[in-house]
Image (cartoon, rainbow over all chains, first blue to last red; front, side, top):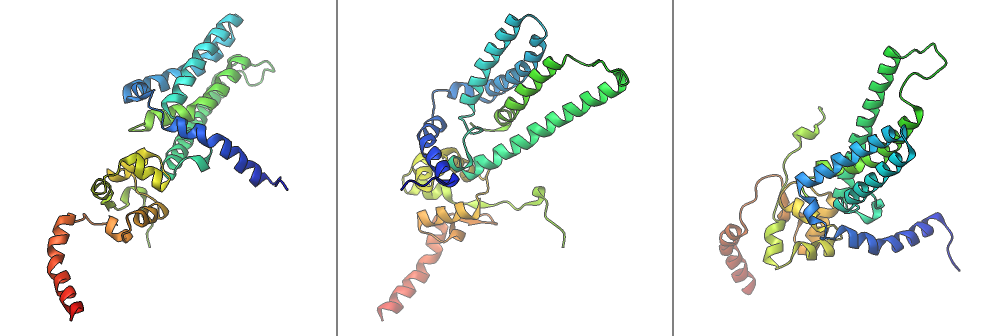
Length: 165
Length: 99
């Protein structure tokens, strides 16, 4: 009889992902992009593009689509450069990679929290808090930027910090 | 008792590189046998990553050596020196067992 517990389901999923994880983690085709300078350039560009999608969201929709397309390309390159180390479940990566990516997640979200704190302080100091109307950046722009930043920052920090990938 | 901070953590020395090359294994082969990524073996060999007790014991089991022969808190003497210095002791031990 088939086991339907969450553990058995997870095991099944892991077994399905394992061959792809193994392939991606040992993929040498992208080694040219894994040199420290190129890697940092991709990480920096991805973060900048993530923030820019918010700016693009305030213009015509084709600007948003264009920025999302370029951001998508860089996001793909970043995941290749990182060998999927940031994305695969804990069971499929070894203890060193788990430790390094935990550090990357911690730093990324600390940085994001710090940026949001600064934004909040600026809004409190210079915005009109008594007015019912929002006086800060357009909410859609903020939502876009924050969403994509939260999605990509850990991978970018990981790619930036590693001595060898 | 004061807590040790990460900056004060002692350095860990190891013989993984010597043992691996001595057995003619690539990093990938050793990594596959232990179940880690091949870069992790490189990090351990260069002393850039201190493995967990589990990984250290797995390496010891793979090389069939006591873990303290692979990892130490003091710089380790070359294995060739150890062999030369231990030879007379082994010879005496062999003679005694022969009797």
